[in-house]
Length: 231
Image (cartoon, helix red, strand yellow):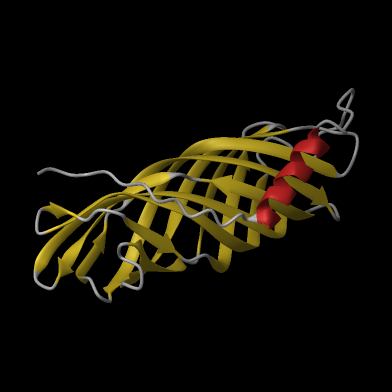
């Protein structure tokens, strides 16, 4: 029969992250950059520690059990709060290499649609992100920035509930971000940013002895608020 593709999208509406994103984008146009003094210098290192909220929107692209497609099936993945960190190295006063990671977020996967009420399993996961950032010089203590790069989505300690032998495959993903830092003193900064790392992963396991195979598309938005220190 082959795979039948069904799409059921959960819209959680992460209003907090949308508000921060709109505020950041609006702030970019409010700074004067003429003759602005940069906040950073070539060779600077910054280490940041953040509280992170992970919002997800997910789509069950396909699912089958024993080789037969399951019509009308969907999936829900829970949000989570965790800690994140990032390290930046400035190649010049505006451009920096940035590595982002953190404590793995926890997620529970549950069926929806024709699989409503089915507890699929749980996992810990998170992105390891390498990005190139551009930091805008302004005539203030606020430094907005944007970044783009690549992420490796890592799944750890999968535990099946209704689905035995539950497994999620690690995945590569593009990564983009927008953020702001506020200089509180010579070397201390407050930081807020939003990161977006959409990816697809393969799900597998067994249900009542029948092999289950599927594909999930996930659109995670990570809101980070914290502090950074310059070395």
